[in-house]
Length: 170
Image 1 (cartoon, rainbow, N blue to C red):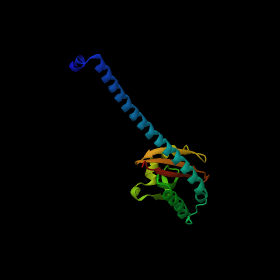
Image 2 (cartoon, rainbow, N blue to C red):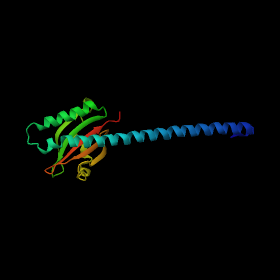
Image 3 (cartoon, rainbow, N blue to C red):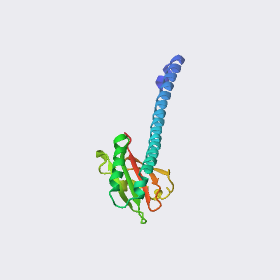
Image 4 (cartoon, rainbow, N blue to C red):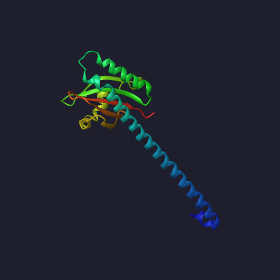
């Protein structure tokens, strides 16, 4: 550090203060950007949980009285309405979990850019945790296939049914 020895005390003090200010400013920017990103993710999870709970309550009657009489079309319309009204939701589905832990889709809607995403594969990573959702309002947040997933329990004594939503980060 030959240059440091050539500076007088005033130059050393000035350059140290400038360097310290620069380091603190860069650190503050990095920390604040990380905190902002984290709060955005948490807000998206909270929004997903609320939307999934509301959707579960709105399709509960349709799921309970599903007797193969075209009720899935009504569920499709409800999902399409949610996808059209909210830009954060990219995939929406209602599925049931069979006793052998396989998921069966009752209805599913996707945005065009997420056409390849199936609700069963979206929920596959969380299928074991879905078993813990046992009462209305119970939700589960998970990440799969580049989407923030959220599942909500549909109150149906005859079958295990869930609303699965995939929210994008854009």
